[in-house]
Amino acid sequence: MHCDLLLGCDGIHSSARRLYIEPERQKVFTGRAVAMGWVEGDANETSDAMVSPITLSTGEPGLVDTAVVNGNGNGRHLIMTYFEPSRRNVFFGHVMWTGEPEGEERDGWKLRGDDKEAIRKEVVESYKGGRVSGLDEFISKCESWDLYPIYSLPPGGRWSRGRVLLLGDAAHAMPPQGESTGIAIEDGVLIARILEQSSTKSIDQMFADYEKVRRAVIDKHYVDAERMAKFGFSNTTGLAAIAMEWITSAYMFVRKWNQSADFAGDVRELELPGEPEKNTK
Image (tube, rainbow, N blue to C red; front, side, top):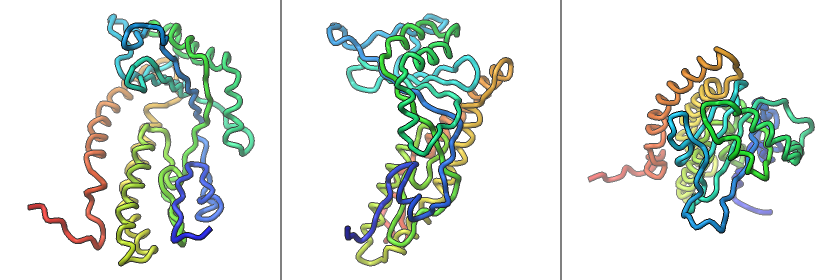
């Protein structure tokens, strides 16, 4: 294969990182896994959308668009969301603490999720008896669960070597915070803009420009992700779990406004090193 450069966009298990750019920077198991499943609406129903049986203690619907439910201690959380326009289908993501998988095959541990009944029982038991009703019934309708371990990378690290540059989780996989896809897309848009200067700049200079613009942003996202992991996925029970639930709610309220500020910028409009100033008149 012959090319001018190579972009390593191959995720947390990146071969570009492991085999070439920084072999010593190994992924770290976060102690958590996600069991993911879907509930599909009945195609014969005449209603435009699935009617969720989930309700709050106030009688209000528990699932309008997206909802997060805290489990019975031990840092378990359930994320539910409609994921397509007809609103007939709901995605579940059950975040739980678990031991590290054995072996190096990232898909090998996923196969343990083939015991669908055991996974479904774990999910149902985690949220039984809470203030959200109808959850057991809804979760029990999920026929298929897939299990994935969650890894992250140590902060910092090397992003490029020679003509190879890492993007997305291959460069900066963070503790789970729900933004990795958006951050990776921004990486791609930014490097595309920088590569437009290839007629006047070397690959080394363009990679350096990319890091100059992007490194501080990623470092901030990483700090925020670690805070989210600490407060949002803490392994606590009893009174400590109740206190952490209140602390998490307050943190999420503040974080909501910080996220708005983080994503208010547009990487398509960022001023790049050596780029002529734009006429704003």
